[in-house]
Length: 346
Image (cartoon, rainbow, N blue to C red; front, side, top):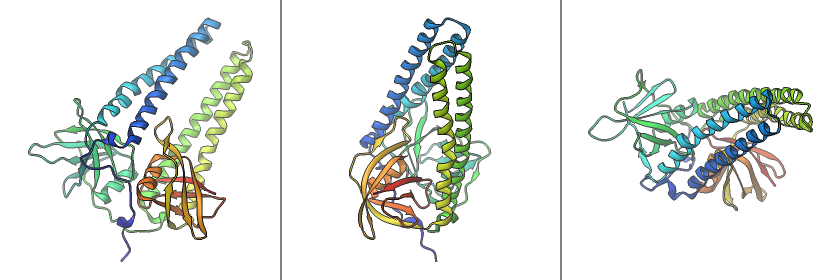
């Protein structure tokens, strides 16, 4: 009989305590809020400056684009980030759905809530997390707020997704079959391989978007070439966006190669610095130590998913693919969970 993934320790919020008890949750939302506010100020000032310097149709078009981006960020601020911040005051609730209590309709998952009245938590999850939930039968939520919104998270992750409390499951839902969770190689792990496919698709989509954006910036620079310094600035900006986009599939290729060829290795690890979340709230950085066969080494986490960092922080374990060596990069993750990243050993 194959060993199960129950031996893999993972981060879980504390049931019954407010989510804000973890200061990292509060810091993530605060940085998201500050990023949106700061960027909106920049866009408004930039749009006003462009129109003031050159009150022509081209400047008006650019100002309109900046205004549209500002409106989109306003929506994110008031309908995503600020509601999330208020929900952090709610205690964490654990759900362990049994037979007939976990239903799926496409990407939407419905989980029965305890109580005399029929109530269902309905949330949209990516395929990798649906596979994870089908095997774990364990999830958390905080809320609801007055509009019935909740934040839903799964073991091994810190970032949640918005869901809603309803009186009935999503129409067309069917019961989710239980998934076995043996401890297998990453290449045979349905959660890891599904997640890798999602990352690959997302990276190609973002790469295409960045290249198209670079082309648009370059074309805009040519149209506005009569303004001093505009052509050079836009050309440099276009190159930066194009290179950034083209590098995204390269990073995913590194993850894919490790998943195909390398077995999991469990290492003892500790963080020497606090986790510093990025402004997007999805990634962060930290530095720590890891125990290798030949002694202790420094491990650096440069812009890696926060899910990876909180698992190292809480479990003092780092799972890597392949044989770790000093002075090299290694792919780290979590067996049976949608977590993969590249870290540096020193």
